[in-house]
Image (tube, rainbow, N blue to C red; front, side, top):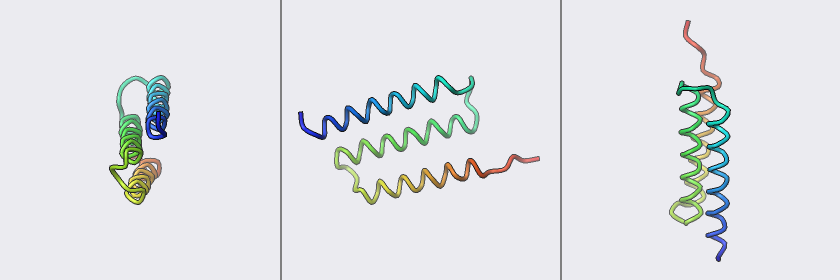
Length: 82
């Protein structure tokens, strides 16, 4: 098997382990933070898959990572109303 196949296998294993970890440690239900964590992980893993199969450039991938970091930083920094 070539390197791309091994990269995809490693990425799939890592994505699966991450999702299992998220769902096994979160509280029941989907609130603002747990939904956002799942969506951000899916976005990062999908962008990683596209990068490995050469459908996006590394510059686009880095833009996705910066957008995810900015969104996650906004979630952490946001204040509760009231």
